[in-house]
Every structure is written in C-alpha cells, then in structure tokens.
Length: 349
Ligand code: 4AZ
Image (cartoon, rainbow, N blue to C red; front, side, top):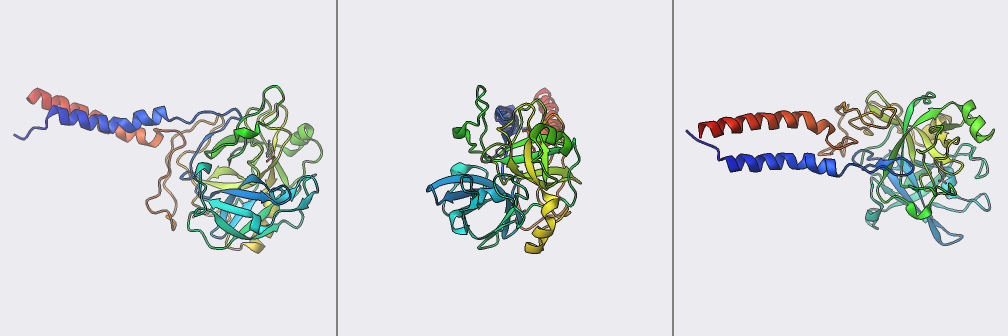
C-alpha cells in the first residue's frame, strides 16, 4: 500500500498554517485618530491627489474617489487658497493617483493627468464650505473599478466609513493635528452620522443642509487635515456607496466636535449633468468589501460575492478588513481533516 511520509504531512501543515500566523502578526494597528490601515483591494476607486500650490510653490495632498473611468469626485476647497478665498489651483497643478493605497509608491508612471477641474457653481468658498464639491476630468479613462453614489442621504446613527491619507495624530496638549503624521498607507475609520440640529449645537449655525456631520461625542475617531476630498461611504445591499466628501472640522477627533462632510445628495443633479455615466446605487458597483462595519468598528465576517464582475476585476483580491475572517473556517476544517488523516497513517505505519 502507498504511504505518505509523516515529514511531508508536517511540512504541508506548516505551509497551510503560515498565512494564519502571518495575518495575526500583521493585524492593522489602531491610530490616534482611531482608524486602521486598509488597501486598494478593499477600496479600488480611492484616489490620492498631489496638488501643487502655485502661490507658495509647495504641495498639498487631498483625496478623491473615481466615480467614472475618467472622473474623480473630490472637495472644491482643495483648489482654493485659504488666505484669499480664491481658486488658485488649476488642472495643470494636479496629479491624480487612482487605485493607489501607499503614498510611497507615487511615481510619474502612476500619476494621471487632470485636464479640467469643475467646482460646484454654489461652492461658497473657504470661509463657509457650503457645496464643497469638485469634479476632476482625467485625460484618459482608467480601467479600475469605480464607486457608486447613494441616491439617499444616510440616517442619523448610521455608521459611515471614511478613507484617506490625512493626519493620523493630534497633539494631546494642544489638540492640534500633527502635520508630519500624514499616513503613507491608506486609512479607514468608522463613524456614526449625527443629526444636523445636534451638529449645529456642537459646531455652530454654519452647518447647512448640504453638510453631514459624523463622529462620537467623546471624539477619538475622525477625518483630519489631508483627508479632504476623500469619500464617506455607507454599506447598503452588500456594497459600499458614497454619501459624502470629507470637508472640514474644528480640529480633529475632539470631544464635543464632529467631522463635517459635503452631503452628496445636494450635488447629484450637478454630477449627473457632467458625468451622466456615474453609477447611482448601482448593483454593479465594484466598491465592496467582505465585511460590513459594526458600531464598534470591528468586523463581522459575512463574506459577500460580488454582484457582477467588472472589467478590471479579473484575478482581483477582495480582502476582509481584519486578517483571517473569511479564510478561517474552511481552512480549519481542512487542517482538522489532515490531522485525523495523518494520525491514521501513523497508526498504519
Ligand atoms: C482638512 O483640513 C480637514 N476633523 C478635514 C477634516 C477635518 C478637519 C480638517 C475633520 O482637510
């Protein structure tokens, strides 16, 4: 009778166990503003924007989201000068990096040319941030998955996920953002949506119907400087869809203050006019994850198959937000089976 040597089975078991051990070691580390590292396989439409500020010849980073092959949705204030309240940044000053998650990988080959910046006609400027919407038109279409936009606004209490490369730490003494703590790896954070009248009590009467507030009364989780323009998303019908855009705040993650986001439903007619192919609540949306968020920010592993495979999905990896979730059970069953089998073989030998 043919026998499998025990050493071969041991080697096989080690090979199978390695990914489980590695995923435990590589668990995302919580940041001070309360987020965790994530990847472009989870958020394929996330876009980094490198913006040259012509007045000072310095740079600013914003985020954006690819909503059609040639269109990025972001915040209008990214292209404004705070001192003069004027648009000072134009298409030639912006390089877009769609589909990137690690800013250490910015390279000229990955940078995409922006040919037009459209600012929402009702944008009120950087003193009040009403209608903080901008659309960037790329020179060429991208073929990675695009995000869908929500046709309805999120409910107070609903958990929203926010992503970006902004500041990850605030100075505990001054509550000021620590500017050299910009993230290299894309970050995500889950925050509950706050009712607008409650937000006005905390943030003042400048909170308009075209804004959404989110955060915890005790602070600790928030978007911050550099996250501007990035998407706020909610999980509906097995997909994440965009409901807002990171806009402004009073400091970051402070108790009694909330992060403020541009409310996407206020801009849908304008977006539809410029980008008729933008997906609204689309079943084909490619922005998806294996696990929906829960109120404490931890994952509940409920794997979902993509509704439709899209161009660019071939061979794509969809990672669970925490290591091991979807991988665990089948692998444990397989390992158990192998152990029983190897014991049997040893007894026979
Ligand atoms: C900013 O300046 C910024 N805490 C974005 C979001 C928040 C604060 C500042 C919200 O990009």
